[in-house]
Length: 177
Image (cartoon, helix red, strand yellow):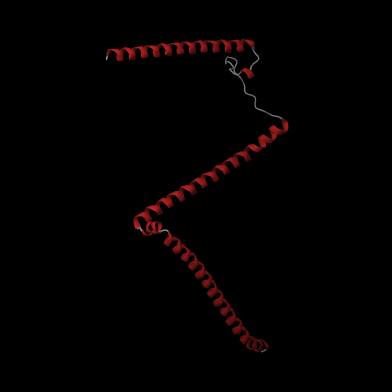
């Protein structure tokens, strides 16, 4: 009985609260519609004013074939830009994972000075002057360089002879004609 009386006394408050909530919701939605309408009207008026000042662009926008071509070009360029951005992000992620996977090795190398030393086969010759202290290998490298220089000089002499022959043959061709 007490609960029923309490429910009867609270029911007008409930109806009043629901009506106030409904009014607030309607006012908020009408305010949202007003703001959206005013923003769209402002943008549309500025766009129309700009298009009226630029009639060629207005014609291009209103022409169906050119609009279709322009839209296709815009879509293609946008997709290309998005793909480029995607590839750049994927490349950065790949480099990050490689760095994460190599970081323990890099840390150990930094802390303990470990470094991979290349093994040199005994029958191979070293062509880097800084990598060898063996005088025999250095002499062999110098000998090879001398041979290469001689070959270069011979090739240059042959080119000069060919050039002289071609000049003399063209000169005789002009004289005979």
